Image 1: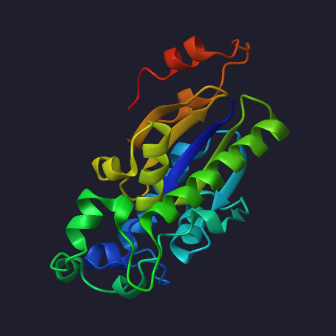
Image 2: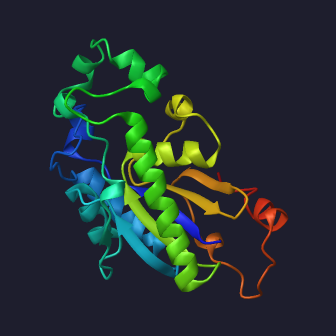
Length: 226
């Protein structure tokens, strides 16, 4: 079993202004750049076996600042949800749309006009993470740690899947800018180790003495740090 760190990009100009960026090429603002640098300080001592990223510029900028010596692999499956006609509009304006309460309370039924269904976003993001996790574990061993940089709704959907939650409950999960959420996948079930983490990460480095894989070992290691 590998360990994946799901990192959200730093704050963007759209986050700051209250707009819905979607797949538009919005960039980090000064606060977001600082968040990315601080995230890099937390990641510095982790032996990352792979770094994967959404292709959008805000994720690439975050990784350039956090891990300047790393060349991430771009993964289309981790791109932001396609919000279609909603992209670029203020959230205060979108909150008046008939689709808004569906997105908030029944997202599995939400399909954005000229955009993507939230259920489709969830399915392709989960598939991408699980595929990469299996690949990293196969190439680097069960103790490997790797990182994927993506977007708030994408990360929340991945976490909901790992927790065994229906997509309609994913709005209960928080993924702040530059936060890190940690999941371990096993043959029987995933374990959500940390959510929306902004503190230390050093304890995620596996001990040099191998611990037998199994639910008890994983569950014990997941008891703190959330």
